[in-house]
Length: 111
Image 1 (cartoon, rainbow, N blue to C red):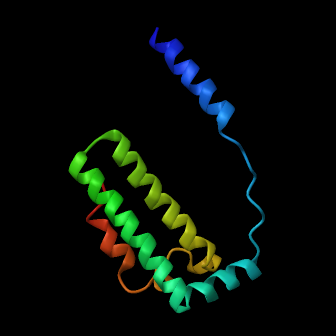
Image 2: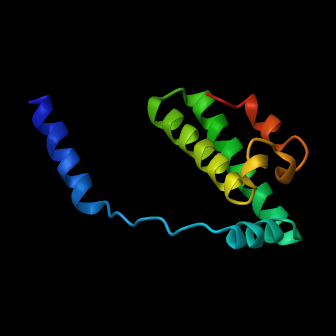
């Protein structure tokens, strides 16, 4: 019975979840995004995203439910991916473009 319920849920999700292949990300795109993130608006965007991720991590730590922890982990993964879009291949492991200590400020909220 549980299998059928899970199978129906998977079919429902598959019917309503679309797939769109990601466009090719070029070096020119990376440079344009890095320039934008260097502006005041880009810095506010980074800080807003950091605040939302921190809040999700805090909710996950307080509620300690798998659902909340899954969302928090997903947000952190998306943030890491977003940061790599604006960094050169050799610099992808550093956090220089993310501001001083931004990655460190999220570590204590990791579920």
